[in-house]
Image 1: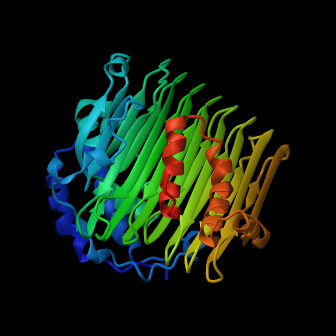
Image 2: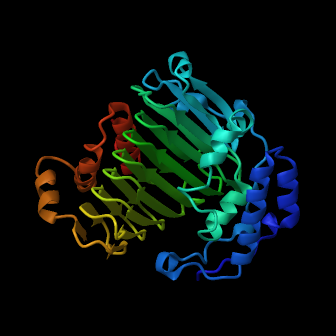
Length: 438
C-alpha cells in the first residue's frame, strides 16, 4: 500500500496556525506554502513503487500524531546524553522540536564557526541559511514525505564552518522525542566552505521508552572544495516510533565526505539517502550498520550520483536481522555522461539470526559514461554453526556466541571511523541492543 490517507492533524487550519506562530522570513513562509500544497496533492497519489513497494505502510496512521508542544529542560535527564563530554567542542540538544541547550567552544566561535539551532540561525544569519536550506541536497518536491517535512519543519541543527577553518574536536547534536504521539520535523544543515573540515555526531533517540511518536526529518550536508566532513548519525528511537527521512550530501571538487549511519530503533524506518559528487575529484565513503529485531522494519534507499570526472564513491552497509524483523536496502550508482574515470562501489552484507528474519538487498547501476569502474555486490546468510560451536567450546553460551559473532560482523564498519569517541559511541549503542555489558 503506497498511498497514505489524509490526516486531520495536519490540515490547512493546523498549517496556517503553525505558520502564523513562526515569525519567519517571507522566503521561508513561501517555501512552506508551496510544500504544503504538494503534501496535500500527493496524499492521494501512490508513492514511487521503485522506492516504496517493499515498505508496508498499512501499519502507519499519520492522523495519530500532532505537532508537539513546548518542553522544559527539567523534563530532560541531560546526564544521560553525550552532551558536555570533554571530547566534544560543542553540543546542541533538541527535544520535541524545541532547542533546550546549545554550546560551542570560545575557540571555535572566534574562528567564525556557527553551531546552533535552526530557528536562531534563521534570525541571525538568514541570508546564509536561505542559500543552502532545501535548495540542493534535499528536494522538497521529491515525494509526500519531503514535502510534509518542508511544510512543518521545526527545530534542527545548523553547523557552518568558514573557509580555511579546520575543527580538530568533534561536535555533538541530540534530537529526542519524549511525548506520546508527538510529531517531530527537525532538520540538520551542515555547510563547510572551501578548505574546511569538521566532525559531527548526531543522535536521535526516545527519552520515553513507552511513548509512540513520529519523526519526519531531513539532513543536508554541503561540502566545499578541498573540504572534509565526517558525519555520523545514530538512529535509536524506541520501537513505537515511525521514522522517515530524506538525506542528501553534495560534494564539490576534491572534497571528501565520510557518512556513517547506525539504524537501531523505530517500529518502521525508511531513509532516502543521496550522495552527489558535484566536482571533479570529489570522494564519498558511506557506511551503515543496522540491527533490527522483533517486528521492526528498516529500509534504506541509497543513491551515489557521479556528476563530474575522477570522482569516487564507496558504500558499505551491514545489517543483522533477528526474530521476525525485516531489512530492506535498494542501492543505485548513477554515472552521468561527463563523469569519466568514475570509481563507484557499493556492497551490502546481511546476517540473519532466525528463520523468520527477512532481508531484501538490491544493488543497481545506471551508467552513461564509457570509461568507468563501477561494481556492486550483496550477500545474505545465516550464522556459521561451526563458529557458534567453537565459541561454545570455550565456555560461552549460545546467546553470547551469537552476539560476539555479530560484533565481529559490524567491526569492518567501526574500523572505518577514525575519531575514537565517535567510533566508541556507535559501537556502544550496538552493544546495548545486543544486550552486552561492557
